Amino acid sequence: MAAERGIDRDLLQRWEGNPIISVEHMPFRANTVFNGTPIPNEDGVYMLLRVEGRRGYSFFALARSDDGLHFVVDDKPVMLPATDGPFAVYEEAGIEDPRVTFVEGTCYVLYTVAGNCGPRIALAKTEDYVHYERIALVSEPGNKDGVLFPRKVGGRYVRLDRPIGLGRGSIWVSYSPDLVNWGDSQVIVPPRGGYWDSYRVGASVPPIETPEGWLEIYHGTKMTSAGPIYRIGTVLLDLDNPSRVIKRCLEPILSPREYYERIGDVGNVCFACGAVISGDGQVKIYYGAADTSICVATCTMDDLVRESFK
Ligand code: BMA
Image (cartoon, rainbow, N blue to C red; front, top):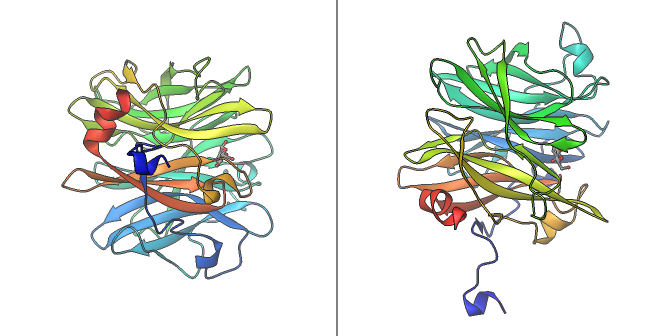
């Protein structure tokens, strides 16, 4: 067996208690729960979860944990698709894949609105993690996977996202003076022919600042005759100019292998939406598995910044 011969199949180590949140943990009826984003705070680690309800559209719930491994889900959802106001028409088919970033002390959430005009990225903020104030729709249709940088760069807010052009999804960077108006958009990480990320790539985890550069943990897909396989990889961006890619991993750091990643509503999916870094450099990466549960895998910052690029 590979493990007995000292071969790790993936750079990330799955926690043996995976999945950490599944529909069995939900205090109300739901179809699935997946793609949760962690919110480290003074009380431990909370997680904003994407829940797909039994009607078929998604909304958000909150789970709370002392240790980042064992979570208890609040009794009621914390954010439902808007039914009136300017967001309603764009959220008709649900709200999906939240990603939380603290910027200048404020907890912001970029999320995907799923409407009948195509997906867009929206921005909200929260003070207590239970109530969410919508701020703006920040992209045109055909865009998903928005992640906000944790600080301004060169005096501007920065985000990554994934517009679709000619059926290809690439990671783009955009800049903003006020978090509402975005521009200076440039493609930085396109799909890579012949590799595991040859079909589509998108931002996954809000960028992590390291001395070497902005570390982005992204998802990449390869198309097969049975559909896409979603894997997780890394790319390092210039600290002062995030439009410049310094390094991109050659191999994924996590690939679907376990039954809970292979089998589910959408099989063969590992889809990260956030990470928590401890003071000692240990990293927990939270990922949706097969669009059916939430899992965690661990590594060190050294693994991400150095090993993943070997
Ligand atoms: C992506 C997103 C994710 C989902 C993934 C796999 O496009 O929609 O929400 O987890 O596909 O189905």
